[in-house]
Image (cartoon, rainbow, N blue to C red):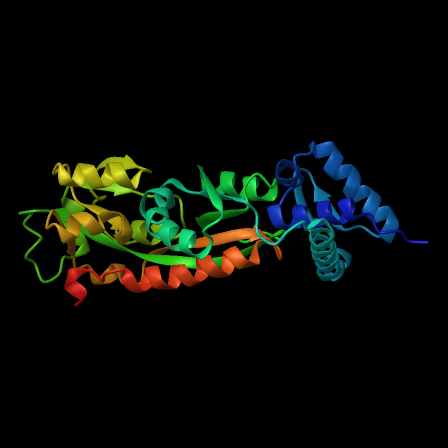
Length: 304
């Protein structure tokens, strides 16, 4: 008689999602030998090999590929059942939100008043961290939802919340401010304050300069958008920045967006994540508010 061990199923799905036994162990808060033991137990139950192991490299077998959709469905069904059994009330008195630093600085102050209006009896608690840290906190039930970069995870639902265009910004009286458009060659010659947050869209910014014989003049490299913005205001250089972080300075005439056609369509996507089927009233409200925030987002001056 075959008995389903959900922990073994979970380990199998995580290994495929994470790409290795070590990374799956970190995500599950287990030791690597424990994950290996769970996979071996599942292989005995199924009487087949799920992975081919070549040194430190692993590759899913044909049997593993055929079993994967059933494993994912089993895991999802279990999680939904567990949620249904353990649900005590539809709305908590305290709602815990994890978010990246940029979201806490620029989006939460606009989101929270609308959220408080919809849930006036709820207290809100916020924690900040990197995308990977927030994903871990949602998985570990340390926070209820998380605002992160675009991610996918088998144990989480991930919904697009906000898309923020990336534009090139210069300070007042910079020679580029009055230009109809700026070429990549011209940008590369200028002192650059280069902000990037690790999202894939920043690779597109890097690729702008790949065809040039000379590397761009990157004077300062930072992963903090607020620092990059203040350095531009101090005339340390020009910078590619998410529009949301410079709205006040643009409105006050302190920073100016520059027309660079090659950057059209480049943006940072923020998703909201939670466990499958969890906190649906809050998620629905957050997504609706996100649509309003997108409508409020002004376009760069040169695009009008």
